[in-house]
Length: 284
Image 1 (tube, one colour):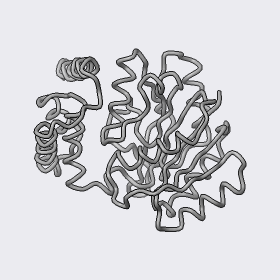
Image 2 (tube, one colour):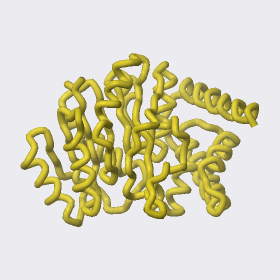
Image 3 (cartoon, rainbow, N blue to C red):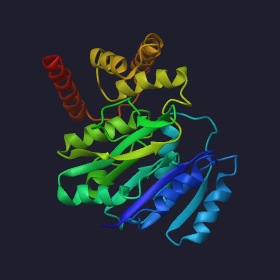
Image 4 (cartoon, helix red, strand yellow):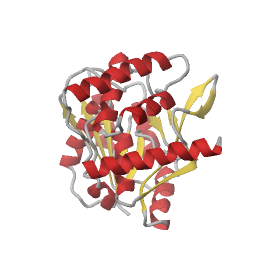
């Protein structure tokens, strides 16, 4: 199976060598690795140039965008610009971040998932972060959820979900729409990926505001959105998270922000997520 990887890069000189090395050292190499230098102001481009000169299957391009980090939007805009540069001769398309270290069997294991179950549309491992000199699971979502920095898509699934949305919440809506079309999501919990820059490092109050907006755009509805925000917030930041997410949702409602799913998909999403809520209540 041909694997294409797109890796957006924005000022990641601290992590880039380790991250790209972990791809170069894979037991099963990708067919192509396209690195997207998204207006980096550090030494990132020189690092990308070094690898593209050394390996024929690695390329990089420069794109220009705003320096400000807008969760979801900036990284997916970069990904999509990279996608436009690639041909369609792939079986699996991967969106990887540039601050991760993959185990050397990562791609091999992901391919096995897709081969062994033709219903799997999205696959990946689990992210770990370093705490007190130990690598521990980054506990901000279910271990069954394939996180944004390490996503791999079967081509047919990727095409059916119409690619990735340039919005915060893209790595939730892709999974939900894939399930809407009957695809399964699979994580291999033995595939532990080191996440060198923990999620939320660059997040601000604006990010929390945008999360509320994303829930509106995914047609969650008010109550389900509130449950989702509470679920993903920690105890110390829960009040501010709920406060800003609520006003983000309200602002999107007042301005009638464009939805990123159809009405039919929204109905499926609400039914699916409420099913998860009821299932947990029954188990408790």
